[in-house]
Structure formats: C-alpha cells, structure tokens
Length: 331
Image (cartoon, rainbow, N blue to C red; front, side, top):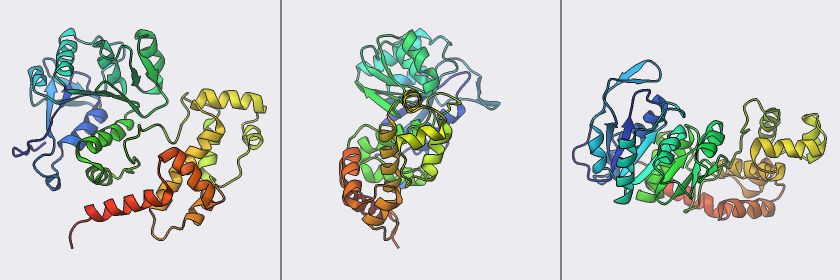
C-alpha cells in the first residue's frame, strides 16, 4: 500500500501475525491506510506491525510481510487487533506488555471479532464490557469471567478500548472512530466510499439495530427474513408464533434466545432502520415512509424514531442531506 509521507495524523498500527485474518486486516487497511487526499494532511498514518518473526501466512493462501516490527507499537496512537489466529491460541506475553504500555500512555486499543481474546489477555478489559462474535461469546465469558461480554451489540467501548463483534461490525466501529476523530462529514464520506450506510447520529453507542439470530440454524431465522421482506405487515405475536409452528409462550422464549430481545422491540428497530434509508430518498414524505415500514402514521414513526435514534425523522433527513451536500464534489 502506497504511503503518504506528508500525513501528520494519528498513527494506526494494525497487527500482523502468522494465521492472519485476511478480511479483518483488509478492513483496517482500507479504512485507515487508503489514500484520501480529500481529508487533508491530518488524516491517519497507517502501518502494519509484525508481532513475531515471519513469514506470515494469511487466510486464503496468502503470504504477507509487515511494514514494521513490534517495537513500532511504542509510537502508535491507535492499535488494531484484526482478529486472532484461534481463540485457543496463546497470546504472547510480550505483546500483552506492549499493549498495556501503549494503553497506559493513552493509545486507543481496538479489536475486531476474535481479536477481543488478545485484549482480554492483557487484563485491561477486566471489570469492563466487551463485544465479540456471538460464536465466541461463551468462550470469552468463561475464560475471562471478570469481563461483561456483550454479544448483542455491534461494538462496545471501555476505558479507551474498543471491541467489535463479527468481521463486518468492525467496519461500523472503525467508521465510528473516524466520526469521533474527524466528525460526521468525514465518517459519512468514508462510509459512502465503502458503500456502507452512515447510520450513526450524534454520540450514541451503536447497538444492533437489525438483530439477527445469534445461534446458527435458529428456527427463528426464517421468520426474521419474512418479517424484513414484508415489514409493513401487521405482525402480531400470534401470527409470528403460527408461522414458526409454536405456541406463543414457546415462541417468545425461543425468540429471546435467538435475538436477545422481544419481537416488538426487534420489529420496531427494524422498521426504524428501514425508515432511515427511505427518509434519505428523493422526495420521501414522512407519511409515506411511515406507511411503508408499517408504523401506520407519521406520529407513530416520529415517536419510535426519536426513541431509537434520539432525533426526529425530519432532523435526521436534514442532517443527512446537509452532509451529502458538504461532501459532494465541486462542479
């Protein structure tokens, strides 16, 4: 990746190790390492940092090399752990020491997916909360009982330590880091370049707005797909339970086990998420959006939108369009 020597922004160090998680590393390199001259000279500096002696094999049959050795962590202001080679693979103590030292001097630490096991091994997450992929949540919880493991959120933060859930949730977290450092216009610009929704407003934590089944092969999953496909339908508990061929009592228990929430909250969050996309379309009327997502009235849409997002639908659309105009290329 071509470096931009004129950059003066925070130094981001992405760890490289044998068994490297290719996709997670690619996310970090794409977001922090891609040339973005429109962002000015204060944009991030990016380096890949080897934590051990190579050669390094990466998922997909690739062999990679790093820009720098582990000593470069001494200068990094943001350190990203892009996954880990295996949740049962030991974390080198010298890496833990480097991460603890970096955190003590004010560096931010970030993990994606199984990278949470690396940060947990440092002890820095003790007494705090962490996110990881739902498949690894029980293992993380059992191995590090002093950590509050949250498998229902896209990402969480604790004491300048940020942990993301599955691989794609890492994109959400890194875009939020950009928003914190450079503001919403910069975050939205990067999100659009990634063809990702810029769906955060203000400083709220990004909780999972479209809950998905947390257990592979869940019997609830087909229902969730059907509800998304026909979001405006009057989805009563009875109708949902009948579709799953369960009693209402069993259905409510299985739904909570699969999604971590109630059917009503899940459906409301999904409707709000879809409404956000529709609101940014050309000429979208509030009443039409409310009907399209099943709220039935603009008043109901406003109520749930403000409860979930913190602002009104009109304000959300105004901010989105203003940021889009600000970032549009000059004619």
